[in-house]
Amino acid sequence: MTERTTSSSWALSIVQALELDGLDCQDLFVKLGLDYSALNDPDARFAQDGMTRLWQRAVEITGNPAIGLNLAKVMRPGAMHVVGYALMSSSTLRDSFQRLVRYQRIIAEGADLQFGSTNRGALLTLAIHGDQLPPARQSADGSLASTLAFCRWLTGKPLVPIEVYFQGPPPADIEPYEAAFEAPLRFNAEYHGMLMRHVDMDIALPTANAELAQLHDRFAGDYLARFSDSRVTHQARQVICRLLPQGEPRRETVAQSLHLSERSLQRRLDEEGTSFQQLLDDTRRTLAEQYLARADLALLEVAYLLGFADPSNFFRAFKRWFAMTPGEYRAQC
Image 1 (cartoon, rainbow, N blue to C red):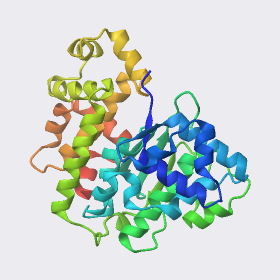
Image 2 (spheres, one colour):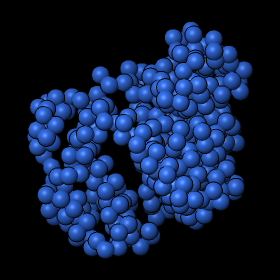
Image 3 (cartoon, rainbow, N blue to C red):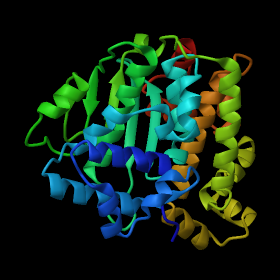
Image 4 (cartoon, helix red, strand yellow):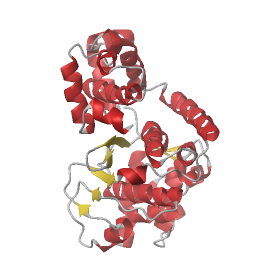
């Protein structure tokens, strides 16, 4: 089974967050069988279940279930590997969020980010996937809090979300969450996420640099390509992208292209935390954003490039993805 991993840079940020509550993480790493010295190796990666056990043990020792929020206090560009610098060089927060979604797997494979526009605002949603262990709530808390802290640092403005969403029930002590987000909190939600104001997402970043953005994109793309080459998900996505203009790809066809049986393809995708239908849907969604940014492509052309024989099916899918029509999305872009 393919094990999800977390970058050493993100693991180091978790360590720094835990140390704010007085934990001896070097001793904790030894007891959990984790390699503390690997934190200083930029190319090292830690098993996600190892990070989950780290969060769990930290809560047991400190008695602080909100300890994940400490990540906001130690957030810095380097915490996100090359991705942090790509975000810094982006033109706007919206551009930065789109890069974060694109390169998230470099930071940690257990997190699945989605970003899109709604009538109320720009919505960033987060799903945390576990391996053998269910994901720690602190991981989602820390991811949301640190993302908001990074946005505030990037813009130099005290940004406040419209709403913040958590899948779990309300904590016994809600005050640390209110202090971290300063926004309405919604628990028992469908997903973890933050709804941001459109006007905030279009703030020009003082660190914007188009040339550096291109350079960081290349670095991040190269790393992701090396990292993903062995993943069936990555290979299947490439096949789907190639086949979509000919119509909706069949699982059998994609499996044959990868020299796998249908059953083997589905099993490998399951092991990597997805399914063929989900991968097809995610690929179409990502390509739809790219195609609609091109003014030379008519909406009907976009529908056919995405493999929809009936344009009405494309419009329904797009409404499900972004809570607006393709025309409305293009007008906002």
